Length: 338
Image (cartoon, rainbow, N blue to C red; front, side, top):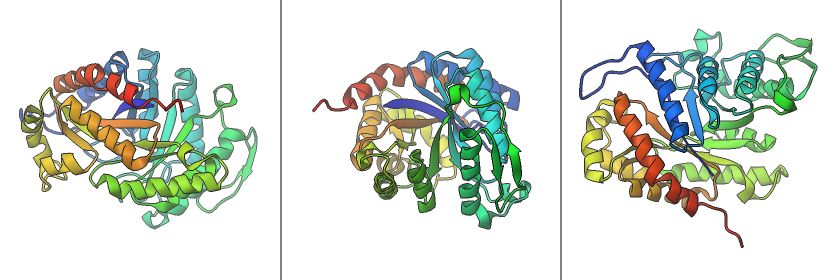
């Protein structure tokens, strides 16, 4: 079982202090948080790709390569890589490069982004989102798995006897997760290839996502990759943690009210969704409840670095969760020895 944190690289005004960090400050903060996450015992640090304000993480491979040079153990990942609007050739080459620089400590989470406008910015149509995701990933797999590729498809120019360089480290491509919140076609794709299926367990109830996990598990087994319980499931979430829940709710409420879900009462969201605003014990309870709903799963990522929460507070949260949450969850979620 892996535990990690992910960020989205947003640059927004602190709802309490009124201060807006610069882009340079945010890049440096993201780097410090990743290094601290490794020191505190987290297993994964992930960063999403976005091309619209208020986000600055448009060149995720660059940021992850920089973090790779400053760390030695933690797995680096994307919390979304846009499989729809990126050229699969560039994805194959850029992430194989980072994989080499990180000595293999890299995997990839594919998704379709957070805004409709990204499609025309890159010459695509949002109506083609699912077909793009399916075709582009099929090509990406071939570019990693095959030395020489001849290919033609619907959405890009053909390739003839093309070799993506560099080749994946030791002949093994980065592991791939397929992220989704509402598209059964993405669960189908993950199951077909035996890849991971990641549900970004935010904003809606855990029960809502559980049905997609069950669907993926069934298909994973039907494709011959193993039993349904062997399927590779990851879950997103978010937290704001203090030693007692009253402090956490009081401190986080201004940030919540300013965010896109601010019309939903914070306490209700914390109780019913993947967001946990409360004590270390409440974070533990939420992850165990997620396991009850999803079945055995392999990766839990917590959203931490968004909404304008100051960096000093984020470091305090990393320390508190590293000391009081991760050891308990690792003990509780060990596979049974029956």
